Image 1 (cartoon, rainbow, N blue to C red):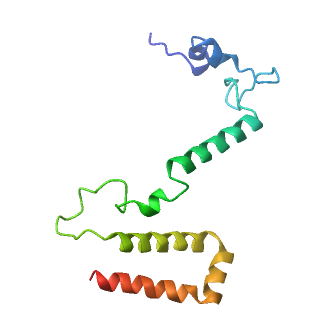
Image 2: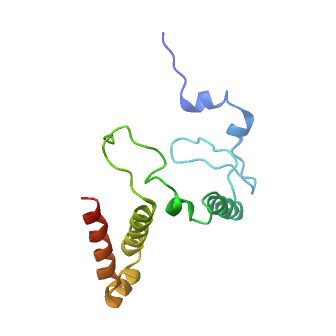
Image 3: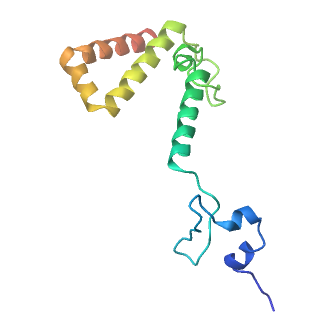
Length: 138
């Protein structure tokens, strides 16, 4: 007769670290589905430090967030769907488009920023810049 192991029975054959389920406090932890134990978990301080290291690494790799603004392509790779006859955008146009995307993202993410843009009149100026960029390439 065909016999299949349940997850609990197959978990007994796994590595000792994976089945120990011991936390830093010494007690095991199981979820609601039948006593499966988890491996050692990170503490809050360790997770916070890892997040800080990840963010600092990204800042260093992206030249303090300037690399996406100053690169020569719209994306990191050229799409195979892009037609061959489309002209390449020059650097000032790319920079202005990226700056508009950045301001647009901040406008959507932070309501106070959008209010400042509208009240100060910068939203109208950004719209005019966008129209001028689109007219120059159409």
